[in-house]
Image (cartoon, rainbow, N blue to C red; front, side):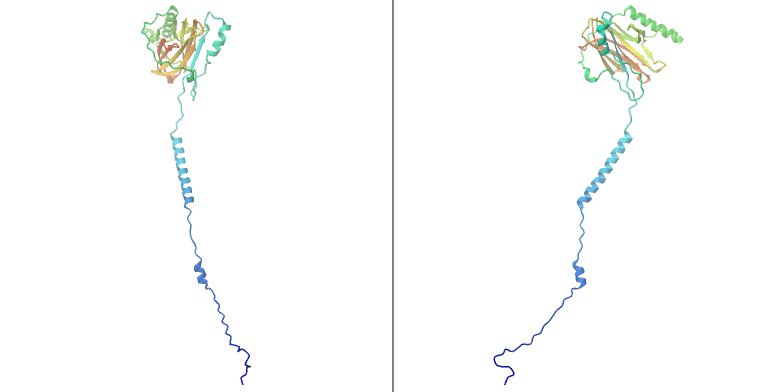
Amino acid sequence: MSQHSEGANPTPDVIKIVTRINPSRKANAAQEEYHTVIHWDRIVIVAALVVFAIIATTIFTYRALTSSPETEAQPLVETEIIVPDEVSSEDNSPTQEQTQATEQPAVAEKTVTAPLPESTIQESPPQEVAASAPLSMDSKTEKLISEANSELSLSSPSAGTIEPEKPVVEILSADINRAIFSHTVDSDKEPTQAISRTVTIDPSGLTKVHFFTEINNRAGDTFTHTWFRDGKKIVKVRIPIGSDTWRCSSSKYLDKNMAGNWEVKITDKKGDLVASGAFTFTAG
């Protein structure tokens, strides 16, 4: 007889297996990898900034070493408009105030004084001037030149036997009565102390030369005085003519740096040459 009844199920034997896996530390370390990333864009930007700074520093240093200050002073020029005799002071005072320039002392620093802005000076095309013989000087001009020669002879005994040459002055228009170089102009606006052909610098270190003209029948015209030194144009001065009887002059201060052959040409509004003069300036 069996130990179990016929209707009961047999109970099988059960085996339980448990497996534990411990990961190795070496395996974990092998799985951690490090990567190096180089940012080339940042490196390029920094390199470009360094190169730019070097170039800028080089240019600035070069300019600082090669630059040189301007030391030559520009000549001073003065324009004088002389009131005509036949016009009253009330009628002429506005014109005189508008056209007369103010004298300025000479300076040795960087000083630029121009008679008029270049924009107001209209260049006229060169025109042919018909050759004509210079007009003879009047008695006043001859007297001034004679006085200047006498003064030179007295101040320099060694030159008493040598008569100084007269400045070269040409009058090319019948409307010009007089054209005279002088050192000064008196209270009546007449030129005094006429210059010689060669002008020597004053002991004070500054010499002034006027070029005076007396004009007839040119009311409404404009005369331009152009000063040249050794053939190079230095300055142009425009002088409006206010009446048919008009006296005017332009003048220039000369210092030791302005030695050379000087020439003044006077042209009218059409550009025609009406008078000219020349002299030599020496520094001693």
